[in-house]
Length: 233
Image: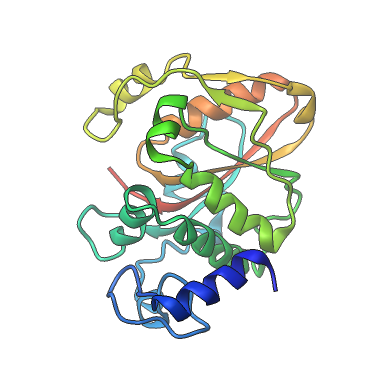
């Protein structure tokens, strides 16, 4: 039993865990989201056509995209949105890990990770990281890695600027907001590699494109993308 699992069981004994969607008590074998709520998530099913789906098409002609998928459709104020809200704003680090692991178990059956060499979570700016205390995309990546055993690289790209939230910006404004937002470090670690870029929610794809475009400067880089949620504009 790993440390994370031991602590989870200890805290579950002291303070029973609740489903982050319906708030019912979780059974011992359930993690973050109960089985009923998992069954009712609005799944994208994009993994069945990972080369050509609405999410993958966001990146066509913008980056060297190989495949892309998201676990579920994300709509603000929907029940599934509670997964993202709790993960990002209520300190729900286990949620990111658990949903990443759940996603990996699902996607591995469909060979989504075939040929991928490493995982790079989209980094936060230092200001945002200090305020939140953690990067939720890293937690998702850790969940993915626990199943796939792919290495997570967090020192290859960093976010050097943060101007404002992307939430209420137009497609063009999002692209402008992210100019020069990322900086490549240690390019030798990813040259000629197939990278899985991980984000929590994708709307326009501007953040992932800005990050991936910097990664491509290392040379001969292939990019695949995974997110928990996908919001179609």
